[in-house]
Each structure stands twice: as structure tokens, then as C-alpha cells.
Image (cartoon, rainbow, N blue to C red; front, side, top):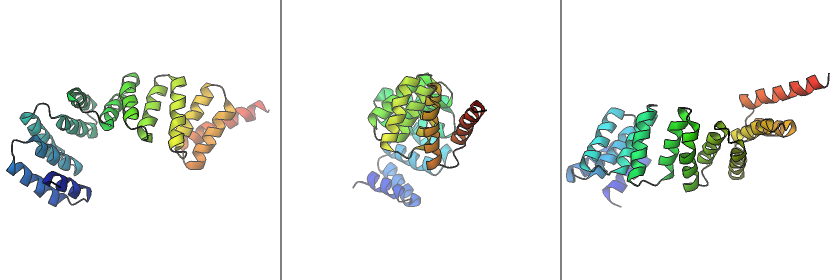
Length: 222
């Protein structure tokens, strides 16, 4: 295990001071290598020292303009600050250089999603789900981007696939209930909302939707 791997392992063990010292040694030993700066930036970002983290990422890019992981780190930094425009630019640059990981596509898609540009989010969230097919969060958000873009027929099987991976995903049940309402299937919608509430009794959206269905049925019986 080389020093970078040792330091990353120390980070995972939450031994941040020891990891920082090791990353510092790595940079002092090889100050022209951008990897040390990226990893130190990741550590600083992890402990919310964003100002210094940003400087380390920029230093890595000064040393290597093709340092994809440095752009990814900057993207994460801006994403955490909800500066989605700058996050997009850096995630796109990382992908353009060749970073082909599910996380970067997911976060790029979510920058568009948070700005309600749902159609623009679709291809990136779809790619994230392709690269990590067992990640329910990636798949769910892909389904949400489809639903929010009114691609209801495409969103439905995506939410169903989420439930195949995690039968206790209350939000997937809720959204299938909403789609059932769209299809005018009140019984199917009620079933989905009930399942969401069984999993998460305080699911307010499911609770409100169920109450509305019950009101419709009670009024129709009058």
C-alpha cells in the first residue's frame, strides 16, 4: 500500500490529522504531482474546509489541466454550496476529459434537477443508472427526472425497477401511486400510497394523497 492509499484509508477511518500529515508529506516529496493536491483537497472538503480545498484543487489543475478528479472535486465543492452553475461546469469538464464514473454523471444530473431543468437532467441520470444499476438512488432520481418531464410512461418502469431492488422504497411507491392517479386508477393509487405509509407512516405526501382518494370515494357514496 503506497502513501496515498494509506492516507485515503486513514480518511475512511476518520483519522483526519494523520491523513493530512501523510498527504502533506506526499506533496513535499513530489510537489509537481497533482494527485497529492487532489487527495488533500478531498480531505479538506470532507472536513468542510472548502476555502483551502478549492485552492488545492486549483493547484492540481495548474499542474495538470487534464486532472479530471480535480474538476470533479471542484464540482463537489460547488454542489455542496448549491452553486449549481459552477458545479455543472466542473462536472462537465471532468467528463469531457474522460472521467467515466456513475457519481459524476449523477451529480451533474442533479445540478440540473435542483434548478428544475428536468429534461436536461435525464441523460446524465440515465447514464449514472447505467453505470451503477444496483444503486437505487441513481435509479430513483432518473425516474423522477422522467416524471417531472412528463414522460410518465417511461418513469413507471423505472420506479418499478427501484422496488425490485428495494421493496421498502416508500418514495417509489408514492410516485407509482401518483402515476396510477394520472392513469385514473384510484384503487391502484390507494394500494401504492398504503404501501408507502406501511413503510413510512409519516410520509406526508402519501398520507395527503390517500385522504384525497378517500374523500372522493366518500363523496361518491353520498
